[in-house]
Amino acid sequence: MNDFNAARDIPILLGAFFVLTAAIGLIRFPDLYSRLHASSKLITLGSAGIFIGVGLEFAQTEALTRLAAVLLFQFLTTPLSAYLIAQAAYLRGLEPLLEGPDEWNALGKAALLDERLEETGGR
Image (cartoon, rainbow, N blue to C red; front, side, top):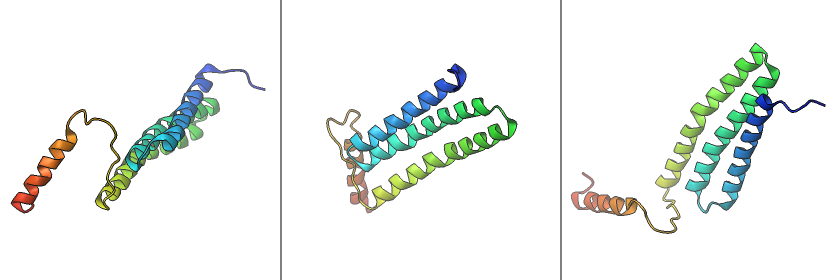
């Protein structure tokens, strides 16, 4: 049985914590947009911690290169795919479920913009 290795085990534990937090967010959040935010951000951070810990355990050039390539690919594709899913849902008419006050009055500004676009015929 291996002993505790802080350089290896702490990134893995932090990564597992982020993955667990993402799973809780998927269950607890009310709509697609907030669930998508939780899953894309936290899964990326969690997998980064796990990959770093595994890379430190193997300490071989080939393994580190492959882990770095997978991590880079995930950091490039996860935000893009989350954005495209959210955009497709919005264009299909799925409204975000908003609870509580609009702190920055973003909805008021969007409503004004929609009214102006309707008045000018979309110009």
